[in-house]
Every structure is written in C-alpha cells, then in structure tokens.
Image 1 (spheres, each protein chain N blue to C red):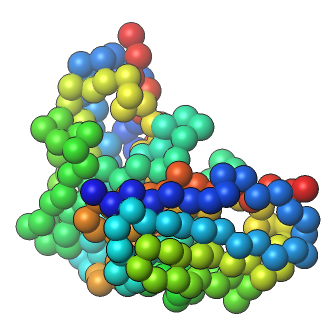
Image 2: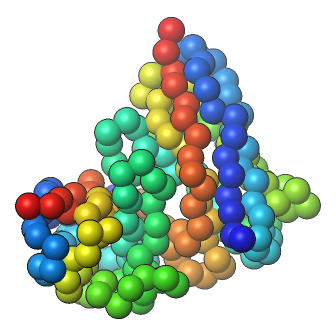
Length: 107
Length: 119
C-alpha cells in the first residue's frame, strides 16, 4: 500500500515569498495519478494540479507541480493572501492515499 | 453552474445507519466517476469509496468494507452512500467528489455533510 508523506507539516511564509511543498511516496507513483488539492479554512478541497504537473481549470499560473517516481513537489512562486491554506497530495487509484497535508501559514 | 450538493448527514448512535445523498447539476453526470471522501474533525482527507460512471466498478477503503456501500442513479444525477454499523471513528465531514472520465483527479467537490456518531 502506497503511503504519501508530505513535508513540511507547516510552512510559515510572508506574502510574496516562494513556497515549496514536498510529497514523498513509499512506492513509485505514476505521474498521471498524482494530484494536489488546496483546502482553505472551512471550505471543501479544490483541485489545483493533476497529472503531477497540469494545472486544473482556474488554477493561477503561480502554482506549478513537478516530480516523478517517489518525489513530487508543489511550488507557489509568489504567495498571495488567498494561498494561505492546507495543501494535500493524492494518489488516484491503488491505495487512493492522501498525504497528511501541509499548512501554509502567514509568518 | 457546476454543483454537487450533499445531504443526509446528522447525529446517529454507534451501530446505527445513515444514507447520504449527493445531487449533481450543471454537468453531464453520466460522464463522471464519483467518490466519497471524508475528513474527521481537525484531520486530513480520507478517500472512502469510488463508483464508475455506469456503476459497474466499485472500490472501497478497507476501513469501511462490509459496512458502507455506494450507488448511483444517472437518471437522477445522484450518488448515494449507505452507511451501516457506524462507529465513533466514522465521525467526519463527508464530501462527494467527481472525476471527469480519465482525469485521474477529483475536479468537482460538494460542500460536505457532517456525520456524527455518538451515544
């Protein structure tokens, strides 16, 4: 069973800074099966990235996804106030696992 | 607009049953694979069940196998979650989520419905 481990647990940054979030899989994951979701406080999750690197409709281009195999990253080039939220990576199919989440908070 | 609206949540005693519904609008429901995903209070996301577009393929998380079932009615643009033998650890917000065929990600989410299992 594939387990996804996200790091760091919390990222404290200021608006305008760059954020780099990591998602490590216990076994190799096909890139097409790796997605990233954003969940703002009190809201449902929203798809940001699918296929490891493709932006979903409505995702600003300051968000980018990358990686392959067991190491994946989500990068936010310049944090906007609305980007402070929790981010989850997810493996579609197989174990259907979500990572435990990375909270991006205002420093 | 594209919407998923869950209903049916509430307070139920351990061992009890509950049926959640999720009504879709604004898109071609029969083109979408559907899942239920839950989130315990203050915790992360946990995928629970999946059903294919015509209902012939279903996947379950081990944590709910034998207790929960998923079904859909494409004529009513709805998906359902039947929960039996509920436990305290099933307490969570339950989201229905849709995947456009072959996207391999959940691109539509409902707002969630809260299920509390407590005596």
